[in-house]
Amino acid sequence: MGTLRDSERTRGKLIEAAGHLFAEKGFNGVTVRDIAKAANASLSSLNYHFRTKEALYHEALMDACQADSVPDKDKAALLKLDPKEALFILAKEALKEYRKQTTSNWRTALITRECREPSHEFKAVSEKHLTPETHFLAEIIGRAANKPATDYHVRFAVITLISLLETFGLYRHLIDEVSPGLDDFFKPKDGLAQHIVHLVLEAARNDTAT
Amino acid sequence: MGTLRDSERTRGKLIEAAGHLFAEKGFNGVTVRDIAKAANASLSSLNYHFRTKEALYHEALMDACQADSVPDKDKAALLKLDPKEALFILAKEALKEYRKQTTSNWRTALITRECREPSHEFKAVSEKHLTPETHFLAEIIGRAANKPATDYHVRFAVITLISLLETFGLYRHLIDEVSPGLDDFFKPKDGLAQHIVHLVLEAARNDTAT
Image (cartoon, rainbow over all chains, first blue to last red; front, side):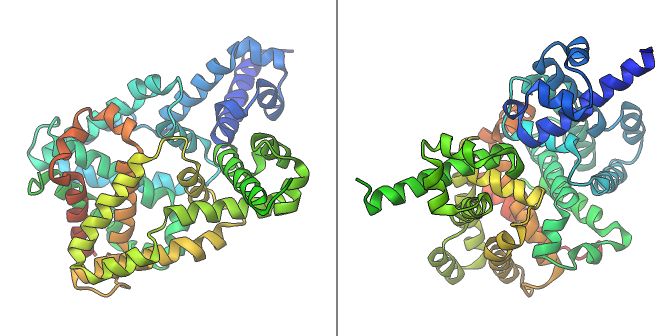
């Protein structure tokens, strides 16, 4: 008997399966048949919930963005703190979140793929997720560096922050391979987050080269 | 009539097609039949040159590493310069190289995929490419910061350098989207490379947080 809850569950399973497959093989490398099969669902229920592969891709991507963003209530709380402290908390939490992820986390992989090779959905991702997120980070970093959020050095610092958090958070096995022991060295006193914040503020402040 | 040169050309076309497909869909998402078809070659010539899909993956990956590495003679020349100057040249050239790449460049995409989700080939990539490359960068950064190449802050700075070059070099459309105008702002006097070098040296020097 199909209840509303069953239907929601099927919808969730389809998004989950689609996200995995799209992250692994890209939009063109996946068919709706593959997705239905991986979700253990019928093609007709896939059609009922999403109609097209495009619609399903859109939903999976937006689901990934949602999970990867700082929730609005956390943003409001962070904006009330001393900006340097807020930045440190942000960095620490982001590193912790990334490190919880296994390599099979399709959400980050799908967003990364989209940032690297934009699809027809890139504009939607950017409006919904990337632009508000970078504005928020620019706000905090700007306050910490006593510059407006629109300042180019602040903007440079925002991208520096994202870049370092992703690299040190997501590419751990790579770092362990090329610099064994680095992770343990930075573990006490959240040294890695502290170093990243230090660099980000330096990026926002430094005007010497331009 | 099959000449030696034809045979080499077919081999090259197979690596190229395989690289594209592996970068897009991953090792498991591709069959030897897909590769032969994309290369406009026969399955028997694929078997002749590579025998297994694993062997072809290995060759494509090593080809990608070769193209992405600093050549040994350039390394020797850079080690003769003032280390800060060498670092600046390295950063400038890497940004230029990355920016020449289109998103369809399979070489970087394949290496990134391998760093993110290591396959059975990761050890080989790491030995052949990643470890020597990071040792070389640690040598230069260590000299510029007056620290041994083995110092953990120098190691942190190496990963900071790689992270920033990749982000600012490869994710241009993303940066244009979230920070329009940033690229033009940093263009004069190679400002982007200068800022990256400044941060990398700061990363190597800063001992405050640990």
